[in-house]
Length: 368
Image 1 (cartoon, helix red, strand yellow):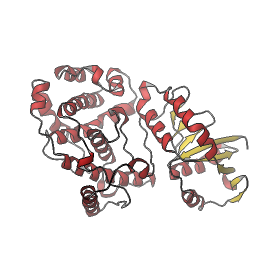
Image 2 (spheres, one colour; image 1 turned 60 degrees about the vertical axis):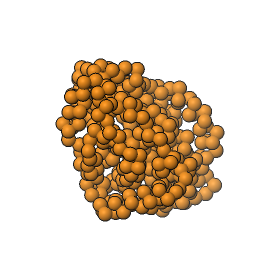
Image 3 (cartoon, rainbow, N blue to C red; image 1 turned 180 degrees about the vertical axis):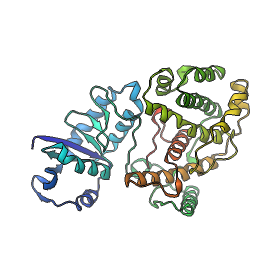
Image 4 (cartoon, rainbow, N blue to C red; image 1 turned 45 degrees about the vertical axis):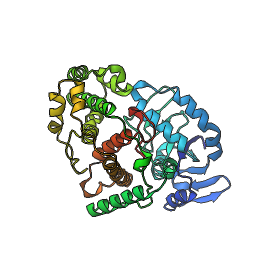
């Protein structure tokens, strides 16, 4: 066959592949698994992945573009977690595309093409030699233990997990009991109040630009609160300066109101954190930011939540994020009216707040 590509996945259990192939008529020989209807042959690509993974990561790391830093860095994080590869040889992409995309989605895989582009399961380019990118963000699945193996179970985090599972079950949302615990309070250090306050002001500026598509107010907010542009993340600064960002970037940045809300609650500026079935009422976020005199005045009004309250919300949100991902993978609406955008932004914000993986704002992991 004249054409080939690879699927890289963090799920090493071969039974996941066999489960997928059970819906196809196929036969296996020394060359691999033949699927006549799609005119493809699927074979073991592990040696290729093992030989190429580190070099690919280093190469693509040097080709990241500022405009697409978030999805491109995330796909490289995903690449580092991949442990199994499948080579797919095919005659005609139009005949093979359904199998390729379905298998990639089922396996939570990166698609690596002959043009040397890293792609989503839907064959959207995330990273190429030219720095091309067709997505504004990149979501991926890996086995929970690939990230969580350093978290020790104790009475506190086991009880927190149990409370979250009960609460989610009462909502009528599916849960996964095998999702591990999150760090307990003794394993966690929240970011300090001034750092939190600066992140809140910056998010307000970014979300306002996303909503209004104008930068003037955003830079006025940063100036009032003495947030140096150098302290704004690279992606955010690029967005604030760019008068013609793609529409999807404006939409994604408007969703930052939800991260803003989560962190304003954590800082004590908001009394309650509403159900993740509700989108925040933006006017409710404005008064404390508008009415503070300067940064010191804003910080003085903070009444940060205690660490356990933050961890309770993170654990709850983390498990809801799994439910949202499962619904998306299975082409279903999330149960109980969950708002995936709300869940994602809270998960992102809380992982940043506890500095869960030592990542900066543009590169926060939200895997489940």
